[in-house]
Length: 230
Length: 174
Image (cartoon, each protein chain N blue to C red):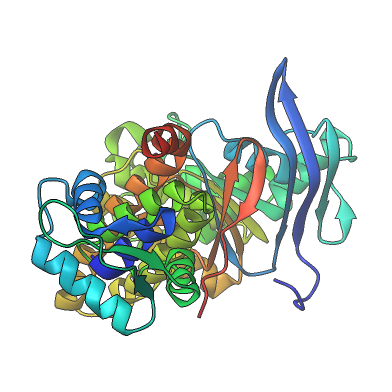
């Protein structure tokens, strides 16, 4: 990405271990504003740990994480938590909807947590149901949704607050191929419209193919795929 | 798959007679589909004509006359170029990908780098097909899906192979 404007998100030599087990061994990556970047790699390669460090969920043992021109990893947890709530969105493999809430309340949740009034939060949540093909499901609870529907609700929740960066960790991992394709089509259309940057962790090539670029994590190191000779 | 380049690769490993090339080709690359003597000798003549191999003097002994073939600079450069570039991502690549990995290991070339390049070439093609899925009609999508699933299978094979290159190298290098 040389010659491009400053990256929105960057990891520089990030090292992270869990006990004696190294997960990242000097991971370096720069993500351009508005790009959809796929992070690929085998199970246990460190790709989810990298996502968690970039998102400020985990603090690295060594190295630096930069977001929008400022150090993120040195912020106290409370500040990182604010950042995650206000400027980041998340979609995980299993939607992780709050079972007691309706689909609509789940989508509105990030807004409610940011202090938006309930009426306004629900009003902002509502259009996402039409956009993601979920019309009529607003009042259902997660147990009454199919896996694909629940994941689309989770996607709406991840995007409703118009985050600058969406972190998606195996967002189609629990879905059949048709539902997975629908989620990826909707995700890419929505983030392109909003100009959201996406870090998409996946081990599936078909999912990675929705991204504009991919990197591979192997043994805790980020490798760019070799340039294809012309 | 490219029989001439594979035979050239075997010649780079060591100067060989036609019957040795056939034997080694069948053992490593034929895999139940042996190459004919006619094809081996025909290919060797063309390689010699094109300056990629040189036929040694006729060796007289028992049985038919034999010649040992030696690879030229030009031939070695062709092999090097072939092994350094990814194959065009398309269907039914099995034999080409297989030959490139085995030969690269046999000749101590960077097989892992080749696989990385192939992975990148496949993903680039998959991105094009995914665009087609997103923007095309249902028939375009159906065709693109066929390509995507096959390339995904190739990629799984590439990842699996990359993960056990050491074992394969031991087998190939003997």
